[in-house]
Length: 180
Length: 216
Image 1: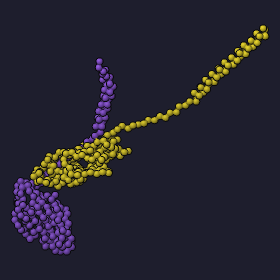
Image 2 (image 1 turned 90 degrees about the horizontal axis):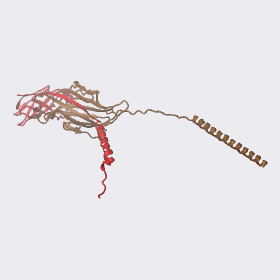
Image 3 (image 1 turned 60 degrees about the vertical axis):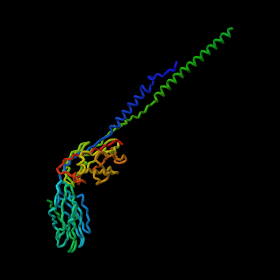
Image 4 (image 1 turned 90 degrees about the vertical axis):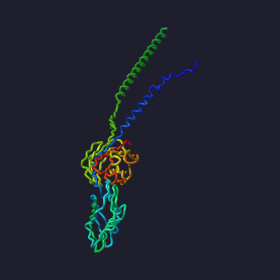
């Protein structure tokens, strides 16, 4: 005769307590899970494609010496800014890039600086492209090779210097690039 | 003999007299006891205090507050709608433009809540190069900010960002004042690092940001 085995069916743990615990845990889990909330924000932004060539405002870097640049605005390859020069010898100067998001290569054909009198101010625009550095000044351009290749950038250093006169001066230069 | 008989008679009478007196005394005691019992019973009073304790039900209520909407004024986002759990807006961006607005999440429940994570989805991989999402948050004591282009706060990627559990709690209702978490949400059309990724045609880009709040 072996030992008498305990009848497991009689165990109250299995019969009642365990199911009760399981139920309680599940119930609490469901209860806690309910206390979550998701709030959403959904927006539709329509982006207007830029022109194939445009001044890239994110590349702007102020390199002025004594002058103050403000109110920069860009329309494709036109650029406007306000320049305050407190005295003779001071400069407003900045670096900026033109982006070409087209696969086509473009060549710089014209460069125009408006609203800057060459009598009182010197201005220069130095173009850094992959071939050469080309400098356009108030007295004419030097150098050659002005290609802006497809999916590429050209960098420009624009400088306006107070040459002669008296007192503080405020200018509103406009730089226009013509590509073909 | 005669004397003895009369003596016995006297004795018997005396005993009978004593027994009668005892019965009277016993009866008197019974009556007195009953009387006192009735008397004491009459001097019993029960005083009651009754109260009703109302236990307010637990409420879990976190939602957008439409009255808190404020356009930041860069680019028009007046075309918008706000419900308890969702907000939609629309704006048109040129390169360099930003559209943005303020919107509060409020907690009118009986539990503190916290922002545990948020998920930004919608733009394609190419669009993610030139559409930036920037967000600022403030709950009255802590502020956090994030941006996909690294312009402000923590630089994040599209997808899910977890928020530290110790920050950005939204207090439960206190009196008539709801807990509040302020958001500024901006979308910006930026220059892609690689010009190949810039759009050459107009694009309609859907951006969805889901904020997950949990009970503290």
